[in-house]
Image 1 (cartoon, helix red, strand yellow):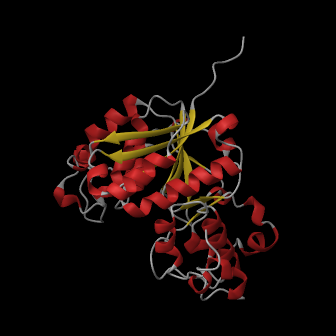
Image 2: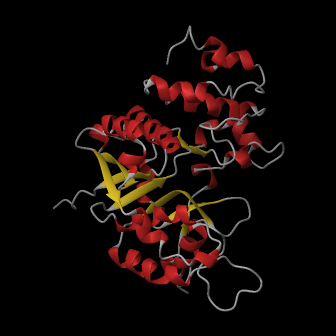
Image 3: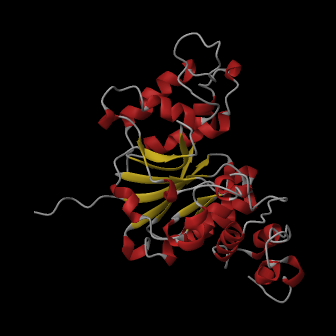
Length: 307
């Protein structure tokens, strides 16, 4: 007798217009690397209930992209989680809506990706990692919640909601358990999943090449420089932490990072032109070595090279 088929999805939370680029890029890369369709991995987007009223153009685009039996949009109460966080906590409240992912029990496992993540290869093997898991950046103890693998659980979600009113940013003057090692959701999630003395019950760590941060990749000297040059294929996704390509001013002089910019723009091919024009005008390639290599993605050539 065969074990029951797992229901798997790649999920993201969309709270504003700029998050749509990640949705479209993920949609493109899932198809490119045979994860969607016959691959059996679904795509999930969670939005606030009022998103369609606040962002009508973006809502229309989102609903047009997310059509088909393997594409799903879920609407949630944005304030349900935020209102549980004390006003005095100084935490980044908006990031905590990612906790909704733990309540998505229609699915056996989720890969949770931020909107600034580029998928570079088939990442279906992530679903086989022990959960919950995420990468760690540099020497930080917190797991980076921009790329996680989780097993949704109503029990975990309910426990998180009970704890949130007691959460605050940690300082050296903190008295007692504050349930957050940092400012955002990832400090809270890491704190939540490290209470057990049993290592098998704690949060796990994915290999750093699963989702390295662009801020780390762009350092002049770092332990990944050999792999960027000779083993770029092992870098499975890139997390554009300080290089938000949907914002002006995100440029890079590192040749590998410039290639990642190109891959990101390629993943937007076919996107509604009015969205594409908003990011192509920023000319992220102006400081790239041999910048003309990327001319097809530069505004000076925009008219002759439609997306």
